[in-house]
Length: 488
Image 1: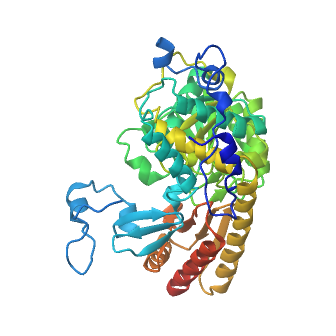
Image 2: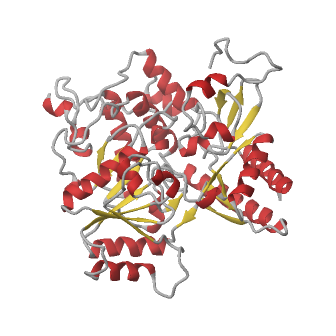
Image 3: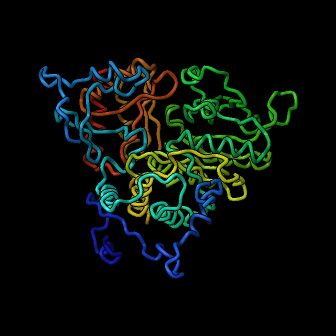
């Protein structure tokens, strides 16, 4: 292990510098100084009281190609993998290697990745600093699976999260590790909100997406996804998201009327769940004033506010949490995707301390303590969030993307194209999904990975890695412009 002094003298990583170094792990956090007794206060201070177990005590394999002029072999996927697969239908090749902002298929063809694992790879593929920390941990036979036991890897992650994320923002949350993905974080928040309030109804918004499990799906608006549930999705009511209606009545006043009216059918409300920027919904951005109004309304009506930051957190919009711009303090925050740094499964449900009323083991699961994800997550926090360099870079790149997309949309005559976005989450809204899909396919043919989102999939969505270089960003925008002009 490198010492803290060695680490401080190593190359400093900033968004403008592309050499990565392993993060420092402060030695003072390893023990509490009491005759070698392990330091556990961070678990007791920050981790949710739901923890149970501790409370009780790329090489090819020779099958890459089918021998037909380098065409990738895909028959095993078609024969054995479920028909529910989707992204591979948009990008019909077999990928074998990934570095930074690039994916390479088995023939070696490069693709500039402006999708970044749907937001799970904010720091790019195989980021050197994160990978080095993981490889060192694995080579030392570090714990891989730990349920919710105390581990050194989890302790370092909680310290880094507390010191670099919570304390500088004056946020006080307990951290629950609910499972491997974003839907797990949402399910835990919904379940605990209902337990705390003793009420059942949850309000959600048009064009929202919160996950595919039944509770999360009940607060997801997409009809196609909801139709896959097979059962009625109950105890949830949909409200219009910011800018959804052209009305003279402010949204929040209308919400209040519904809650006050005993005959509105909207009663027994426990919580409101919202995305500040709807990613899967088509890059719909809530105004800070609207979010502040929503938060104040929740406070007045004694409703708990849940912010789903699964895709838009970890710096995607600029600040670490997407809600920081609005200056609100949610009761629960759902975090996943890039919280693990390098694409490994990890999710957090952040809980206002007085709401953490779980009994030990009341909400549990097998894959909560995924220690390699803690290691990479810690490396990401200590590498990128010790100052505001990444946030400033993301905002600057976001302005560059916005300007380029606006210029592109204005240059296309006869086709209505609406640019939208914030930070490093942007989109082009087309007249229909068929047109957007053709643009996505044309981008793929040119070596750029983008996807579609929103109602009827009519928005081409861009989620480049936050660590993208200036040259890569310019190249990707040029490829997208070429795809749009070829189709429109």
